[in-house]
Length: 337
Image: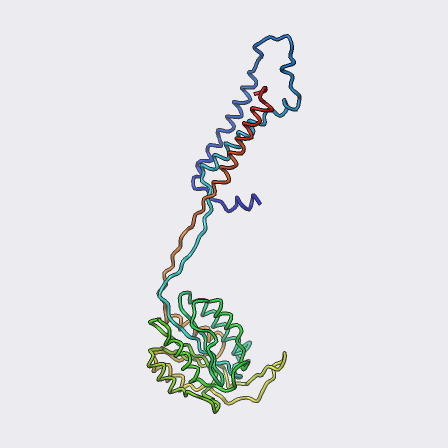
């Protein structure tokens, strides 16, 4: 306990430890003074001076506590303190929405461990590397849904990303337009000056009959709101849909949903963004790195040191040791000192 307390303590004035050199001189002076003591009176009886042997053996105790008191005072003069290094990050962030395809084809394993898992892992790394940005998450399949509103709470957002699964809650299909429109709507309500959507999909528009917004209409919405869109086409080959059945992965009929490169390029180009192709996990990481370089936030990092003074316990120790010395000197050892 004491070691754990002391190992985290620094001393502002370590030169004060030089005073410990005087303590041996005090010991020497005390021993010399005792050796020079001689009786100076003659009495008829020594009854008044008879002292029990244990007191004689322990008569050095008051001086010992005086040394402890002085040692504690020297530690006080050295100014013990605990220093905590802290870092504060401030800056002007960007409002970003990750718009992720969670359709059944994202369960394909041409990108290990699967397209969905690779997209989640890389997105999580991206979020952790943007400390001052406000980021949200929109998912889409046969319909779109805001999984996480735009927030600065990194832990909440990362938790939502980690819990994503393909074809779990939304209707089947791929409605790129509705996903883009939902993401753009989220950004229209944010106060940020710079607004970005990162749209990732492994297919083309494959809407159900209930589709509300087509991709070109969504593109016009994004343009009207001043939103820049980066599009990512993910997948090494035509998708193979994988459906979860209990704890097993049940392969379905190979799909023919190739990536609609022309549409993704059009969306990116007309909003001032770029289109990227990611054929493996490392390629996807490189895409996010490029986006990270293109969309830089103004970040200021301030390192500061918080100092907590720790001299109070040593002052208390010095007072306690001094009190013990005086108590012993004027009670038990009064006739010996």
